[in-house]
Image 1 (cartoon, one colour):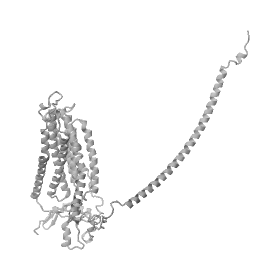
Image 2 (cartoon, rainbow, N blue to C red):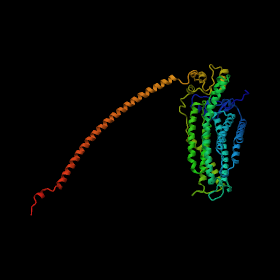
Image 3 (cartoon, rainbow, N blue to C red):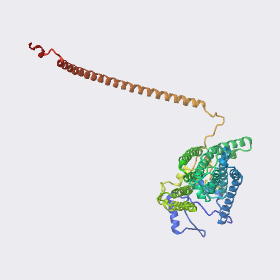
Image 4 (tube, one colour):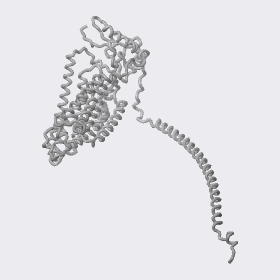
Length: 553
């Protein structure tokens, strides 16, 4: 009686329609009285696989606030470590380099810059994942929302530092080259940020550096490394550990050899790429096509890799809530707001538009950016749901819990480890409820009295002595394929021969017909020409009638 339980409980109904009716009745009556307390009902927004039962606890707001505060401290500590250990050495080198007469750091410095970006993102990947786990969300979907937002914030922070350093380096390079504005003013004599930023020399250099920063350093290189870092290397490392440690066997060995747990950090990766890509609109348009073409090709590769990874190299996962997608749609406000700020910047002092100078221009761009974020949020929150699907799902009244339980091994009973223990040791069920583990579904025993309707046969065991390639089966398949190809080739050859014979007959007939017509036409033409020639000869003959009957004088 002294144990404080989790304030949430899950009730299972026969159909989805009966659940909805119970929720409506409870809402209309103000709740259900139970032992002096009022219970509130609502339809669950998750599935059993997405509940982290170990995190179900009766925690108050103070405990939750402490966890969030601790997570933020870890987050900022990770950012500080990245800045001090990775970024400051590179920034110190680039800012103290001698840029006189246009000298710039070489290839090694550029590659170092790319690796700093990769290392920073990888470090924050681990830190954000640890923070999201330590916050102890009950639902995996909530954990993924927290992780995605933290990771996106950390990457944006990294990008902001990189762009600031890029701006400072570009300014030093152009000052070393004694670059001037269109009116002959030295770049070093410009005092305001807007004047320096709008100068052609800075625009050209920043556009070039932004493109180099984006592609391939950010868009492609981290994802080329990812297959090795997340699939091949961990698997080989675990194989070596298990091979050299005989005491690691069974369940532990299976866990070590299993794929990595899937997460939704790809939302943040792609959103970061979009944020960087739209910044190119602040500069001359020579890099626009290259920037978005590079991003598109990189995303094609990312899609192909994720397609393989989801199907071949991760543990099973289930995401049922749309919160991660909703927050990613909200994050789209940032690149869209940047595009609006770019429009304000480009439209400044153009014919028919406003004209601002100095800090007014920066303020106008910032106001446009935040105004769009506000509008984007309002539309996403209140307008977009108006066009969403409403009402019951298909089969809400006909699909029963039994139908679902027969098809799916994971249920609200088998997913709860505490209930499985109670089933065996407290309720003495026979057979008891077996805890659900992916890949071990065949261990669940059917017991209709306690709502367990699933049963399955074990998967076929792998024969480790069998060759990796069944040569006999391969030869049989090749022989079968060769026979099919030969038969189809002969059939095609017969069809082609028949078509050629028909075509030859038709052509021969048409040729004979044409020959006959041409012969007839030639005979007619010959006759006409002969008659014409005879008439011509008669007109030109001097021994005609007038010559023979002439008189002599």
